[in-house]
Image (cartoon, rainbow, N blue to C red; front, side, top):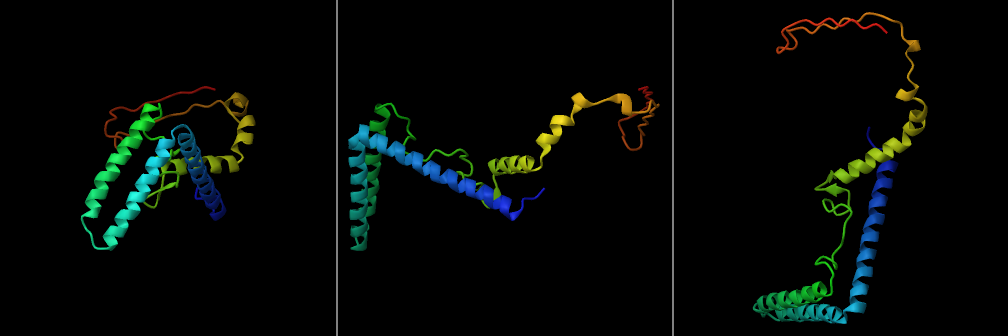
Length: 175
């Protein structure tokens, strides 16, 4: 069953809220690192400063500045990673943590619905179908054979429609 526009919008709003939450959690982790390891904040400021200085040099016509910057930034990033790791934090502590790394909590991969989107879609459609209420009363525990008339059923499997079948079967069922 296809989603209505309002259902699709509701799912996409939920993804938007999740992205905001992801960024909020990253900022909390970053602030924690800055409190416990102020040298990391200094290294990030140094990275930003060198990047700006390199941009100025590139605008002035110095093409060799970019190679120097790449080396410097790699060194600073390695120092930062070592400090964070030495403090007992995982390598990806200052990166976004997604609930769905496949679509990065957008619900879409290359314009197609992600598996997590399809899961949310099915849950939404199931919740809105009122099947939960119906299934509480109408299920196999409530099944009664008193409504069925005893009969004999014949099941014939044709060897023409099923080439691997070589015989005819007859099943008699008495209820």
